Image (cartoon, rainbow, N blue to C red; front, side, top):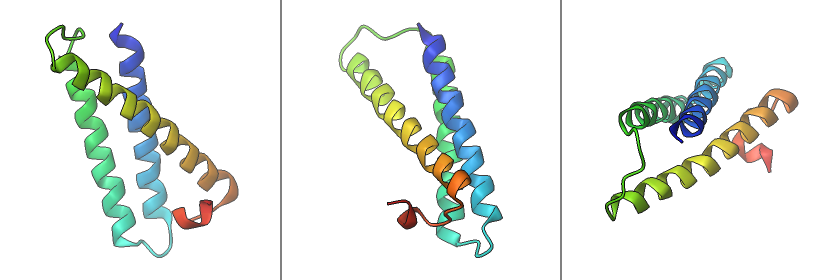
Length: 100
């Protein structure tokens, strides 16, 4: 049951690597955007490390609830990351404010 979640974590890491590339490619190279992309990339790789260590869903509370909460948050965060990156690549928007 871990494989789908590990694939989700890898998908998030790929999205964050693309975000980092887009942040460096932008001609202004805003510090905040590059910094946020680096932090997101580090967090996604930390989650992959955590996911590869946890080989099963814990049965003890509150660890089970915390893991389920983390997985749901990461699912929505991954969807949001891929949406923003897709819009930036297709439409060429550079600022997240321009996406709305």
